[in-house]
Length: 200
Image 1: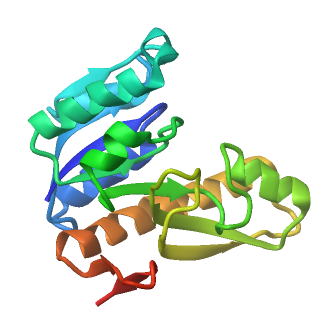
Image 2 (image 1 turned 45 degrees about the vertical axis):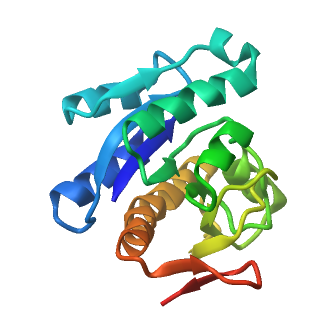
Image 3 (image 1 turned 30 degrees about the horizontal axis):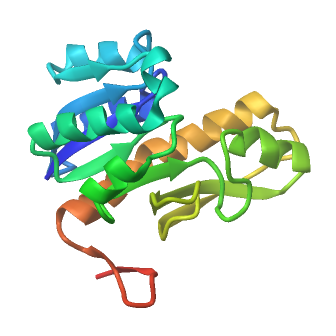
């Protein structure tokens, strides 16, 4: 499976995917890493792994549709099968969604539909929930509302701080995301007529 990975920051989930591929736990290759920021550390991770990169700037996103058209073309030129959003802080728009229908995967640091949006961890912590977690889902035209592929819970301890909860969430992300991508790579994931994801 050829993947394109979209990032915006440090790229820790990108690194987890790279490590899983190198360990033989994920039967895939990363054909292109696209960053919404030219200074994202994830670009360095990609370059260290000899993965081609494309970096956009804030100015590029002044026309979001044009930005997504550029990204979509780059991914198609790289012969990408699936698009993997890994800490990508932009919404996927029609040029991407139309080019990769039901083939854009996103990772969210909460148990959707609870705590959607860019601050899932801090929102859950501020609310005082005792259970949060990680969701992997297909992206669609509604933010954080695509069909859910997998979820894993994370318990919030009495002595957890926001920082310690973030560490626990990220540790789960780094394990769950490569596992789900392997299920996709082996053809075990499908969206049924009911609109729900079924894993075979």
